Amino acid sequence: MSHTIRFELANAATHRDALLSANLEYMSWVAAGIEQTFGLTSKELLGMELPQYVASVIDKVCGEPPPRGAFYLVYVDGALAGMGGLRPLDNGACEIKRIYVRPAARGLHMGQTILRRLLADAQAFGYQRVCLDSAPFMQSAQRIYAAEGFVDCDPYAGVEVPAVLHAGWRFMQRALEQPAPLPKSV
Image 1 (cartoon, rainbow, N blue to C red):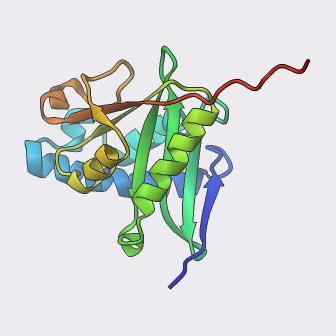
Image 2 (image 1 turned 180 degrees about the vertical axis):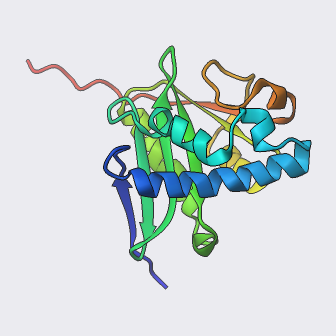
């Protein structure tokens, strides 16, 4: 069965409700995994309840428009199925953030589709390196990242993950090949 997939470039003001809802759903899933894996609650880690945290970081995570960043709400057959974005870091690098596929859309290779879109954007925006972080309970995502050329690295400047989790967290990066410059007119 063929599905219609649509990437909608999200605007942190215009799409705020959808962004907050999708990010809270994602972060609730992450928080449950952290509590199960590390025995720490989101309030212990973040100093606030999850809805307040998501609202406090939504502009930082989702607010950079092209060509510095991008954040997408991804629809399958008209229904919000997932999200993902990238934001700038220092030194020619960017960070992939919040790739999430809702349970109803899993099995459609949406995680890989979102990742490839973000990698294409990062290259088009001129970044030389893409970083990301992944929790230890995200093995499916980590397999996709490795298949797309990501390798392990040390925690990088600007990472959102609290330092207390770094030892058990996975940080990855990938270099981007830049297209050859266009020839100058003669």
